[in-house]
Length: 296
Image (cartoon, rainbow, N blue to C red; front, side, top):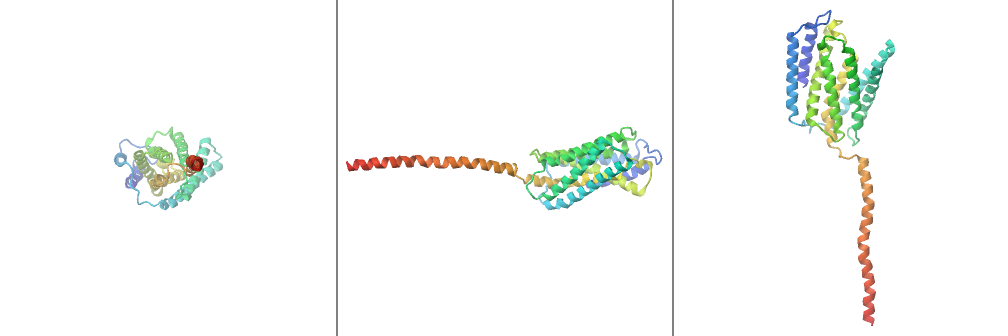
């Protein structure tokens, strides 16, 4: 999917420049670059669907420690994006409830990524923590919808929109693994499609900003948005390794196992001494009677 995403990002770069008007930002219908990007998108979805039919991805050679550094880097990237969002709200004195919620959930998600990286080789469970990122993506999705509700050019934002949607599905299905509800086929499909849209929405505008600055077709592209996309991409790339970690964990948490063992110990202690006491009492009661009969 990285190759499909890179190809889509390159096509997206030239599409933003040549398929959209430099002054108005409007796009003509059925431009050759737009059609080419649609074909690449359809091919990527078909490939993801074919890969999902295989079930799980072979990750037997993956090392759990290999995901520790990417998670820390992703947490740092998301933390910087949320800090910039808070700084912009204070600078322009524009406070929105949903934006404050999204920034707060983003900081909490970054902290959870550090926690997951620190305990990646332990048996600690992250089921509840893994769901926080889903709420963060939902808040981001609401902001994207509110910002682009009046935009007549659907092609300017729909790749980022689809990237956030499929990332939310992938995050949600991955969180289900921690609750003993794995869906490997759905995770393979949603994560693969999310990687394609994330790469397309990330590479295309970034290269367009480097090559063509201050153009109308780049309206709405922010550095914090690109950092958030980069975080989601790194986290999804680490999911196969993290899923392998969950599969090697016991089905019940360690504290539940300790409680079960503590409840089993008294029961065995009461049953074992009860069996040998009765025959011993009978033997001792019979021995004096036999000795008394021989004396008579």
